[in-house]
Amino acid sequence: MRSRRVALNSLFISLGIAIYVVESFIPFPFPNGKWGFSNFVVLLSIALFGAREGLLVAIGKSFVGSLVTGHFLDVAFFMSVLGSVSAALIEAVAFKTKVFGLVGVSILGSVTNNFVQTCVGVVFVGSKAIFWLFPYMMVLGLPGAFANAYIAGKVIPRVQKTDFGVFVSAQEEDTKHAVQRFRDSSPQNPRNARRKCHPHS
Amino acid sequence: MMAMGQFTDHRRFQSMNGQGKILKVVDIVVVIVIVISFLLFWLLGQSDHLSGYVEVWKDGQLVMVLRQDGRYELRSKDRHVMDIVLADGKVHVENSDCPLKICERTGKVGPNGTIVCVPNKVVVKFVGKSEVDVMTW
Image (cartoon, rainbow over the protein chains, first blue to last red):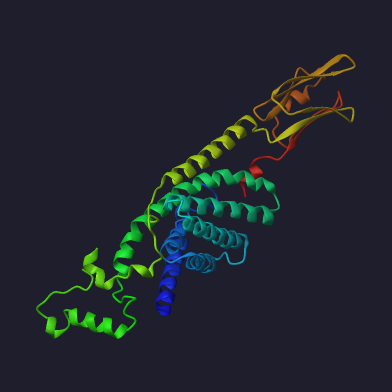
């Protein structure tokens, strides 16, 4: 099960990195702004696995994402890392309280992200004028946060239903058993040649 | 859903009774709070878009500080010197009694700008941060 967790977390982190890099090409009505779609992966991770995994994904995507985009260890990097980590923390707490729906959790995360980024900007640039940007960032983050929540809300039930298409169940710690059963039902098995069998349907 | 029960283990994911919901009433409240606070900020910013103030110096002394839009008359020893008009975040001089009217011809001056009237020894200084400073960041 540990290896499964590792694999899923890496999958989520790489998905986050991909979205992180690609979304910087999408135009945003604000200098250096982003829609924040990569936080969708964090939200999904928190909803499916928990706070620890969400934090892991947030840290991983910011670190590797800034390496890829060439922002490693500059102001944008610290804004990204601290912003998304604190957003993940707040999202995890908001999710645990069971008060908010996914939209609320996502929006709280987005607002936290923007607030921390503003604070980091104030510290680095040394001008409090940046605080005036916060309300605009807060409102501009809403559509992205809403989209993230919507997609996550559509993905979560499907993932829970199909378990990422993985056929091994947790009750069967004996993986061989499940593999054997998969082979038994697989069309490749000469015994099942006539029978069209899909383990997932 | 139950058709695939043999391959599915719901316990693997943390229990999400009622948590997978996309939108709850609380969320709408959160959105409304954010939008209202932004609108408040925006409206306040509209009425107070002057990001600074205007200092009027006469004979090397600070005689007036203007913070609100309006027309201010500068008098010296009961003599009309000039009118200083502050409007739309800019300041300009009218009806100066100096001969060359260079201060009037300086036109409207925004943040960090200065109008000087040499014959009257008047300096009108717009002190404040220009908003351009913020936008370039």
